[in-house]
Image 1 (tube, rainbow, N blue to C red):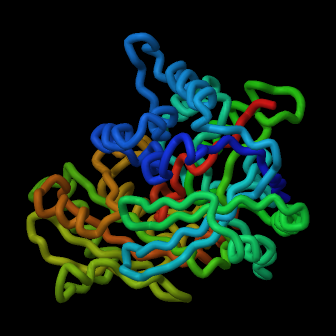
Image 2: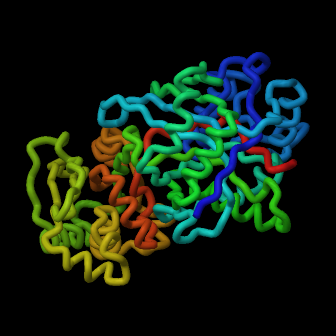
Image 3: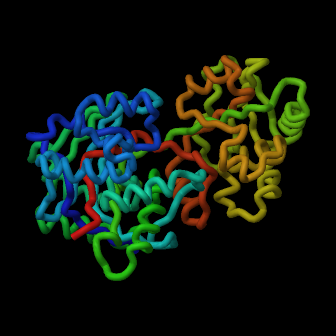
Length: 429
């Protein structure tokens, strides 16, 4: 069972720091240098100053600079430390990549840091080697979780949100902010003991599935082990929890792009041969049809395909399940049904000869969450071939996790991201 608690948060005081639109940012791992500069220019209190720190002439160590800034913000009164535990409901109104408007409801709290395992906390996909040392150094310096991990739990009776909803319905948000993509984030602060107890009890029997923030969770584990001893704040981590049954929870695809597969090369010949042998190939009427519909029931694994030279869109459907079963014989049946797993095994490894290390380090492999971005990379010949994945039903994510498997990297795209800067979890008394 997972263990959650309310938290006595660090958070901005808008009366001193200003409007939240100038204070929050996307998660650190999706911010480039240009965007970081733009965010920092919005406010001297923008969270990128501490979550994506840069050294100065006076304080060249970026992590020391982050700690210095956080202390200064608290001294200014721009960031304050609550003295009452709370759970923080978060509603996100957004238009997804499919053009549909939705609302996703969740809440921020503390979660006990544990090893991955059945009945507790599971990852849902493999991660590329990431900047875990960077996050660990930042946590050591600031002694705080600055960015929430996004996780899922099962709550078929909607018990947790039902306990929070009356407070959401009858009170003004603690903070409201609108992202650059138009997502409206509304955050409330709930301290009612009965509501808090109901939420904690509702989550207690659930297994948590990390949707976004695997690196941050693994950093939290490393930090907890490093501090060691006792049951202090270092044993807990900041999470945003969303019920698997929430109507606003959706999973979008991440498309694959490969390079180094030049026309007339041996790799291109091998790719063409494997596609002919292992897939039924259907030419599509236009490029807009490259993204398949979500797979249901016994439908065959399929994905869209187009190369940069021919620019002819195709749909590739795996001829026989036995192909995946043979190449993924050491994997569960649920894993063998994943389009991203079939692509990795049949195309990336078998046809193109990529190793696990090449895939992990994105050597000849890239990703695009935006369909038009993927097409642009093919049109410009920055990529030689593109594979277009289907949105994944959330039930399939659950099935793979319950089988004890982790999906290939970037198998899912949970949209929208949870902003950084709404609140922080202090790792000190």
